[in-house]
Image (cartoon, rainbow over all chains, first blue to last red; front, side):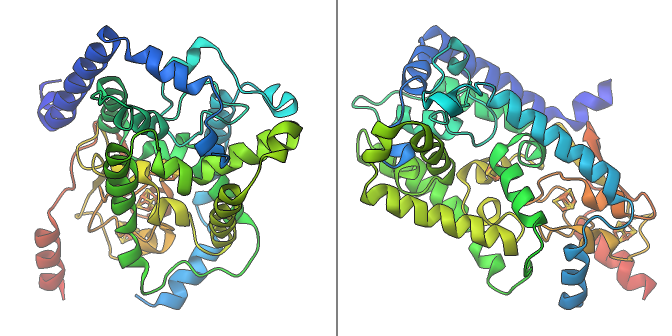
Length: 49
Length: 308
Ligand code: SF4
Ligand code: SF4
Ligand code: SF4
């Protein structure tokens, strides 16, 4: 177990950092911004605008 | 290494031990694509899904305007934050991207991305194959430029313009095709921009018949991003130099043209596992928590020279 942490310390630090970023994003309601973009057809994506 | 022999081997990727596990990967890829595009009704109605699961970004390249999509595209969402009228740091999207990267690296490319699956299927079609050529090495850098310029810099400079989505993304064009098949009002609005994007998609499709995963190798900003994590991700490849007999079977099996004996955690490796299955000595293994390469590149070459 100890060696797993040692071998993967960078990944674990990144995962913790990523979780922190996700929580800050959730706290700032960024999921709503993602949702509101994703539920409307993106004209640029499909090549219309 | 004889380029012709490598080419020949890659034309027949099902040879040796790669067959059954290779098709297991195909099954996993298909299930992943289906889950991410579970709104099958949308392909007939020409309407996109509007449920709350779209709050979550999927790990691979899957346009949120695809009628089947039940999640959000991470690259589209990232540009949406960077290119808003008021700058917002993309905490949530970046957090998710780093999370997928740190856990899986480019396993996302090998197993979870629907656009990767599409290219895999196209390469299976019998056609003229040329997977190794000189400029390949240089073209690989393009995807980093796409990530930096089209996904980050230009959306930051030109508000409300997701440049990568608008001018390049073939996943978006595929979504546009599906939508316009089923939705006549959208079909009538197709113009010059769509024509341009259709040309890009056409080039990607035709070149995928000849070269293995050209979009992943040369253009995809998401693959470029995940590539940075391959070395550190929990999922890694381990190479045991003691077991290796230098037969090059792994190098011949790799359609991404990686040498896993030198770079088992190369940024270009999509973790397909073909090399692992091809190795007669079981010198390569990959999985969660696997150690780093048994020996460094320098140690390897010293060993090799000593043997010679
Ligand atoms: S490189 Fe891009 S398109 Fe290719 S499999 Fe990875 S995320 Fe998907
Ligand atoms: S190095 Fe191995 S796992 Fe990586 S892309 Fe090549 S064959 Fe697939
Ligand atoms: S790692 Fe395995 S397949 Fe690759 S050269 Fe060594 S023995 Fe051959």
